[in-house]
Amino acid sequence: MKISESIKYVGVNDRDIDLFEGQYVVPNGMAYNSYVVFDEKIAVMDTVDAAFGEEWLANLDSVLGGRKPDYLIVQHMEPDHSANIDVFAKRYPEAVIVSSDLAFGMMKKFFGTDYAERRISVKDGDSLSLGERTLHFVTAPMVHWPEVIMTYDSKDKVLFSADGFGKFGATDADEDWACEARRYYFGIVGKYGMQTQSLLKKAASLEINTICPLHGPVLSENLGYYIDLYNTWSSYGVESEGVVIAYTSVYGNTKKAVELLEKELKANGCPKVAVNDLARCDMAEAVEDAFRYGKIVLATTTYNSDVFPFMRNFIHELTERGYKNRKIGIIENGTWSPTAAKVIKKMLDGSKNIEFADTTVTIHSALNDTTVEQIKALAKELC
Ligand code: FEO
Image 1: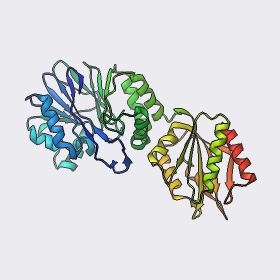
Image 2: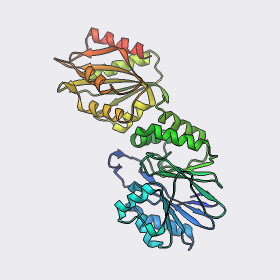
Image 3: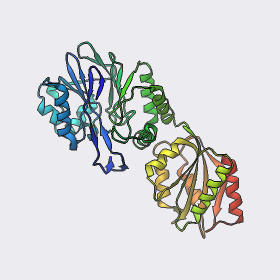
């Protein structure tokens, strides 16, 4: 794959992976991207996951045409990109490793060496000339580890964006970009909205024609669309109008309440109702929805004077990512002493700009005339 006359793709697609980062299902696989920038000097941008070292080196060979790389630019030390640094360093003993101080510290931990005799340590604003082109380095701490740098090629106007603008799925996956990029962003980077906003501010001063992330496709058209989405996501804004219902149900009674609410929301003209059964859905999908829409209903049983474990886990997933700026409705269920609503509100105590709906639905075991009316009132309030 050619990015420009001077930039070639040498990444790999992982179709064997079961869980990315040990927790995310990736039905369409995962791409570990790597690029080679050709000029008087040659720079390789990052390596790939440990399992794909040989394939990556073969890709490198096929584009290098017998030349030797002068630099390995290490933008991110998470092993899905860094695992082959030492393999590269041994194969090309004259190549210089270019990265941040923090990354060299991590190399010492991963490989037992920080390549002190063959490295260039770069800071925000530093640059490296390859000949006709210059690479400019931009620090991007916590997008998504602290050592991350991104790299801007000012000749071809290409931003190598590390994990930023990445997505789940192999590069040839036939799927909507936003869906899997959103799940990736909120799963992996979502806690660091403020840091992503800082990065977008730095990027705004650059003229960018192409974004080369470390996962997913190279982006070269309609870049405003992707940047606007990143701006919405990282500022915890509302991307789509609609309501998410996230629920747990043990014997189906809470589920019946959810089904009624869904019907009432639609009857009241709600443009989209997304329903997630937290015990059965992909939790990352439910988290993604919670950040996508501006309104959410949490429906759950009381359990051990607390909330049902899947709901507790879900709310924790939200709060640890800085969940805010949302309207929340609650449906609680409990046969003898429902306490779920109280527990949910306490769990969201530290979340900013949260508005709870006036109507809290309290079901004592199964729906009755009173709770049906409460659900109708909640639907009206949320529409
Ligand atoms: Fe794709 Fe944070 O590693």
